[in-house]
Length: 186
Image: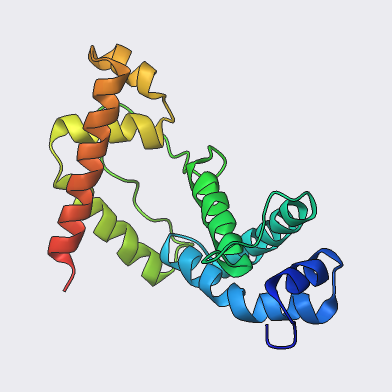
């Protein structure tokens, strides 16, 4: 921001779509957003899309006066927060979630198909191994939620629990999976 007198001047240039200002924003912020998304199940294409969406959202908010310069608050940090929330929303969305269906009592992940690469096969095997360490109740809840795309209320009805209980149990099951992962990571 050296070529700009103040943060307010920088924001004015941003709203005015000043080319040098936009380039500076990309240079200073894209890498952080990309790294966050790559570290949280995303790909480079996802990072590009999310960063673009965050820039547009930040631009609109600055233009409409919803973002103001305050001490300790930077435009770059604001853009990162928008990107982070957009990515988390995408991860939670139904379109992003896997829609693999499990039949009957088979609670293991599907075998990788031939068109998967060796790295994908290793990841699938690793995830299957972690999943198989869970107790039957956790397998049942996670299978219904992630693979059958059932709501917490539907799972609660099926298992004779409240949706809040299922939410807590699902959280504990995911925590167990993370613990298994940490324990198995060198």
